[in-house]
Image: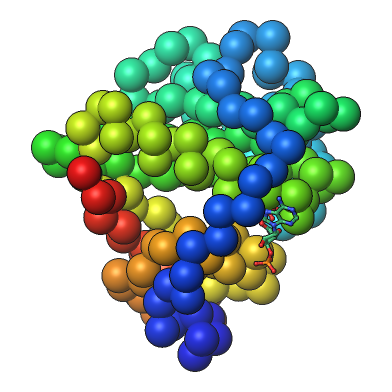
Length: 175
Ligand SMILES: CC(C)(COP(=O)(O)OP(=O)(O)OC[C@H]1O[C@@H](n2cnc3c(N)ncnc32)[C@H](O)[C@@H]1OP(=O)(O)O)[C@@H](O)C(=O)NCCC(=O)NCCS
């Protein structure tokens, strides 16, 4: 993590995106799998966990909710999985956000996070926790959270393996 990242949010970039966001449907599964396969960052075990949560979300689990972003030329361009944090009154976890390799840099992730925050507002959510890794492959994710106003709340050094910290972001939502 760079010194700039450690300083926290630098401002909110909410440029409009052509992406539209909606709840996931069962027929999105192949497109969701294609998103995971389009990404070289994920290791096989990470991809398997992501798919497990996708399947729970598609089965209408109350613990794992799925939002899908469509672009005009690429339906199912990205997705976000979130859910209520166990044993908390109104904190939520953003578990996964992935945008298809061909659809990045067009505000798809920003649109997904904005839609999630709006949904949390409707559900009385008060805070969001996000965890990620400090490795290079997750640089775009760290940049995204910082840009969307997610402050770094904790860094657990060598958590995943030596030289790979767990970074926890924690954002209080305004009511
Ligand atoms: C992290 C990730 C989800 C970001 O997705 P994305 O859709 O490319 O993100 P955005 O388009 O919202 O933002 C990326 C860049 O596009 C810019 N952008 C945002 N809206 C834009 C728009 N409407 N038009 C053009 N550019 C835009 C952003 O400012 C940002 O620029 P920056 O990188 O210089 O800050 C994506 O890189 C990804 O799937 N990575 C692999 C999976 C991963 O690491 N997931 C997180 C951990 S689970």
